[in-house]
Length: 138
Image (cartoon, rainbow, N blue to C red; front, top):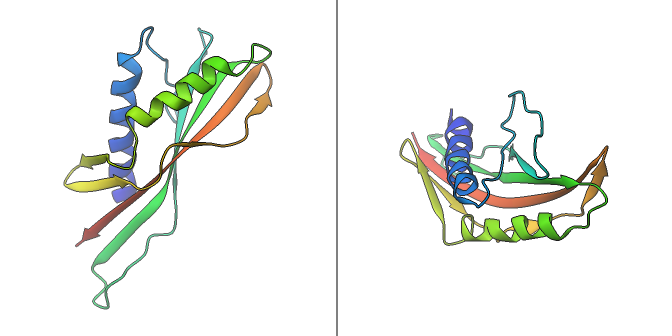
């Protein structure tokens, strides 16, 4: 399934970025137990749109959507650390980037953008959105 290949392509890039930060940025991976043990962590989500077919023969698939990374920082400590992380994603996920997994090329089509921050329990959360597009002929 291509959603799985798209998700994995993004997760490999995010994991590499997170491990390359000083200090490393913890990632709360989907459907995995995670207990925050530091003051900052990120949580990724793949938000696919409806798959489309642009060919009459039905063998084309166009995958679009958003890869969202929510940046969690402790509530009450300002938004500086979270915003710095959000801005840093542009070095990995910018419109000149193409991710590849299993022969599927995933193109970043939108600049990294942040949505309105929100509070949840003891956390201040900044959602970061990255638009993508992938095409496949089967």
